[in-house]
Image (cartoon, rainbow, N blue to C red; front, side, top):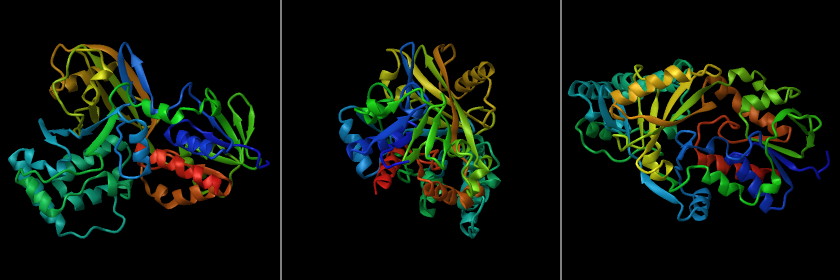
Length: 433
């Protein structure tokens, strides 16, 4: 194809929109193909009977840099900054998050075991390339690992944690120092930990405000309701679901990497052609509108114990009261599952309501007046060793064919919304070089 062909972007989520925006500003011809009828990907907000439901927790954890400055600048006056208020519900106790810095709130016998095992673990040598289970035991001690780290992540990832490596933990799991752990055992405040200690969220309207900001002025570049059936890498042609052929000079893909590899069957020599070995967990988000307030003021709560089918509950109306009608409240309940094996809605809502009541989140008699189940087939990338050994080679091989695979699922990473926007900007820069 000639260089007059456009840059084609698959997917109008945060990464795709930020790439399109950067290319448009550089006067590069670009076309964005989006399967859904509106932009945003998992950053959309669904409205049901006056309640606004995001695809569970989509909060802006902004670090320093141009992406933060862009978002804060362009959404000036439309965002509220929050200091994280999160807990772990464990042994009938609400423990401030992260538990490794606050386990002094547990029963005295558990506190003693936690600090005893941590002191023992501190003398051990972390093995080279440990599994997550071994890492958690060596990093925090057996008791904390068994109370929270292992059962919570087992619920979240649904694959054997013995097969998970730990490169993702460096930014996502806070690691207090030995001194801070000792302070936690004594019930002292050892400070604020974690990438999500503060966040921004739209004051009104839900998180869809963010992709709408990125999409402003791009209407003529967007082909909505346009899915991609396959990619002819040799001819540099995308074939849509309705069998139209679109040539490209560079392709920026933000679809999940396994799906991209299946779309391009004539790729050769890529180690990832066994796309099924790139593993992940799926999540069903049960969004509930309630006829009155909840009983907790946390933004979100973690549930590591097996007696609860969900791993996390978040309260939308603790981010913004605007997300529900006056006097009402809303929350989301996250249940992870293996891909293609979603939980049943009918029995699950009953279990959810029983769990919410037993944890003291909603009072007896509180009624659900609006509901929406939001499926996230790709939710969390599972960091198995196949990914560690082959991901860089897969992405490099795609680059050799003028394909950039970016975004949380395109790059097959555990990352935040800010990262997706940055990836899109960087991908645009790469195709312009």
